[in-house]
Length: 605
Ligand SMILES: *[C@@H]1O[C@H](CO)[C@@H](O)[C@H](O)[C@H]1NC(C)=O
Ligand SMILES: *[C@@H]1O[C@H](CO)[C@@H](O)[C@H](O)[C@H]1NC(C)=O
Ligand SMILES: *[C@@H]1O[C@H](CO)[C@@H](O)[C@H](O)[C@H]1NC(C)=O
Ligand SMILES: *[C@@H]1O[C@H](CO)[C@@H](O)[C@H](O)[C@H]1NC(C)=O
Image (spheres, rainbow, N blue to C red):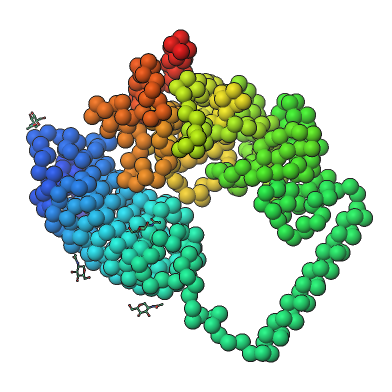
């Protein structure tokens, strides 16, 4: 008995020791093993200095989190070593001369998000264990010599957004991949069979150079459509079709008659019983359902004013239309956002609002209503006010003011090319200041209150091009836990759940927004993200090499007189986008600094 206990305690101690043992020293050992095996630029590492200072190595909290040696002249087979870098998030060894197989210890890289091995001579099968690395977001194995099938467990990787496998020797058919891939390519392999339906939306060039068929390539022949039908069967089908058509007609006539008999219900709904037009809110089936029930909807528990049909209004600016009127207004789809589809609804009297139909509301009604009451009570000149909301089992709507000038994102990135009016420095800083003030106001509402979704497409513009921040404080109640957890270029590194964004994480996103404003580069641009290089890091790398001037948007280059201020704003942006939350300034501080720059801008012009 005694002895067994002792053994167990000994074992536990041993486990504990091995656990603490995986630290920077073991990371260093792994890097040295790699260096010994493949050489190249790793030969330049200064072995007396900390591995965190080595070329291509980045650390976070004293562990190696990134190893990037692209085009580094690495030759030979990867040793069993990299698997010991257990905190590694990005591994980029693209465009080297690595050969052999992917070593089995890669299975230990549980933190890995980005794996770039394209442009080598790696061979063998793509190991299945790669697809059990749950955190993987970008996987690029293109331009190698991988053979065998594409593993069928791809679907395990729920966060995967890039899968590049082009220019290998892969064979077999493409598995049914049910992921929302933003980047996908399997061209120039030896794949055959039909393209699974789930991938039919990808461009044709993603499949070229194989023996594949089906959408987006040519249809597959020799399947069902090729079978000859007998004359009798054809006659049967024709008769059935005619019968069904007659039946539909009869139902339509019946419905029209019935509706006419009823009161003054909206006429445009009547004719469309089955058919829907995405371009009008009222015509989607669930909305029709609400309208039919609207008179029976119970009044909500609270709200400044209770709308007749369950719409809860804030303030009096909109003069309390009812749900029926809202659904009858002519509507136009503005776009699909994180939360659902946004419509522009125009009332007959000329009033225009934006209606957001929420896809998914993962919280209970009470929590939703409480949150909306808090959001609806927020008022600031640089916020787009929430005017009303609607909650029922089948439908959740938010009603905002309509901003005719669109978003800052569209203003900055849209219509680049001939005919574009350059966006001047003064407009840019004014927008930055307005947005900063709005976010400062939000943060002043309480230490746990944050915007949660700062990005340039959520900064809308007033008639005079002043910032109006939208979609604030609703992330917690409208993002479903099952939404794929995408990294979108604005998100602070410490954020793991998009519903839980701290004020410091807001500051990070705002910093990225400032960098976007200064560089004219979109942080969500796939090319920028190709190698997991985000906008802050890209800017940092250029600034470190003392090329600051090259960072700025070409449209800003002529504002020589304010270059000082541009550099100051750049420094502020970099501080906001600091890796460690503690190093980031507060929004109050950020607003104050931008205000000073604005003063300077108006004095010089
Ligand atoms: C290597 O690093 C050590 C310690 O940081 C430093 O003293 C030494 O000068 C470095 N050697 C070279 C060649 O840079
Ligand atoms: C690629 O792999 C095939 C076998 O799968 C082999 O015959 C060929 O030599 C390899 N090519 C290169 C460039 O390594
Ligand atoms: C794909 O090719 C393999 C041989 O390379 C063959 O056995 C298989 O039947 C082919 N599949 C289809 C669907 O053509
Ligand atoms: C896929 O890769 C091929 C070859 O590298 C390239 O020509 C094609 O444009 C790529 N298509 C997509 C959609 O990435």
